[in-house]
Image (tube, rainbow over all chains, first blue to last red; front, side):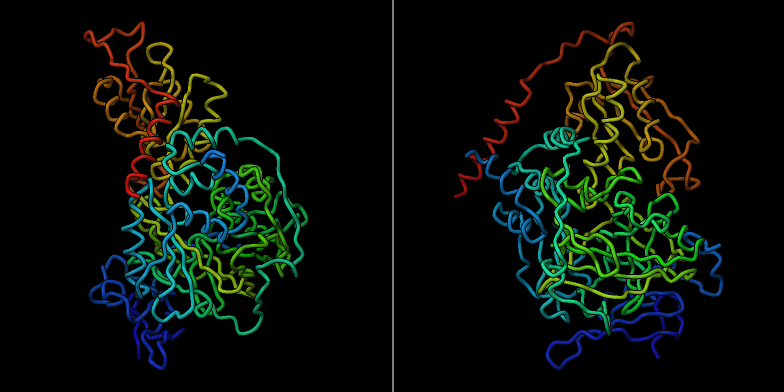
Length: 73
Length: 488
């Protein structure tokens, strides 16, 4: 199970595989909980929960802290 | 035919991104990256390394991105003033000040030439996908900055119609809005209520009417440049781009009823999912800082049209200097100048290139002591000035505001403590990273003009007057040309 590097949710899905011939050289994932997308070949600074700057974590259990753009009526 | 005449003729013949890349290539402003690269971090690093050269950076095509065989990406298309000079029909080495005056000369022209092309004749319809749409498969996507929330289309021109007046051509909006890919056929679009797009989304959701957009990727270079210019709500950006270029713009119709550029590389048609908001961001924005995470409107892609071997055009944006600064800089400066000039003919030029005008320099003919401060206050009362002109430096007409060496000279030699005014606790664009409270901040005026009566003059200082003007600009270009010929 792949956990999201940003919010640690397990609600992740594989979106795309990049190939060279028969070989898969990277995969793109998307987190359904916090909408983060990443490629598993990226530098750890972007895709490792431990190595990412904690400032950029997203806490989906408290969504109200993230402003709604054009709040629907 | 002079070099300028030749380039002007070539520029007038540009009707697509491909034409423009050819023109840039002919003048050494377009390169193809020769190596195989990874999407991250290679694209980001190459774009940053190239983009710091605001005067001469080339557009770069990437066609060996690993995992994306056969896909093409271009960045830096508007990344230097040399590229903009060629678009406007001038030789490389044309000064930023000259480009500014060229743009001012075109300002307010209304000679539009919009040509209609049937969809069957439009190159953008060479391929069409209506089933099994997968953006990950169609575009060589990559993360622009390290902590961006995902993969962004950051230079797309998005077309939408007024949901309450859909047949009004003028009210049809074309704007650059950042789009985050949220799935094979899902995108979030970032906007605010003050944007035309924001207004239209609010209207459609309130009325419960469908709201469709056409996302144009890889466009006529004038479209990107002028779609970023705020025009009136009922003014067409297509007409504006044509008038500013003095050249025709070829339009056709998208599958979901928008007017689109016939020669664009790709058009993604999408429909708003009413009431749905998905996490969006962060995204490295133009002040060089990340915007926060928001919950933004979601769109489902309904069809994609594209030319054969489409070129995905994207932009590096972040801590300046970046392509974004070159793309919007002159168009930010021109309206402030035009509005000020109406009241103060003494205004000579406005340089608002820095972070959308968070720092700007205005040159003028100083009439009397304190005059420049009054003009500065008027600049702060222009529509753009109110929210963006944070730090304003006023200089005399003998200082080229686009030449920072000269501006520094004015600051060094013409500024006293009493020439500095700070207006605190004013409205300011919320995106300013220095804001204590987003949406409020200071305006700073530094009057670096020379003393004028009745102000007391300083110690006897007679300024050296080196030759200046168009003849000197022409000589500077001649030197550059001779230098280039010397290489051959």
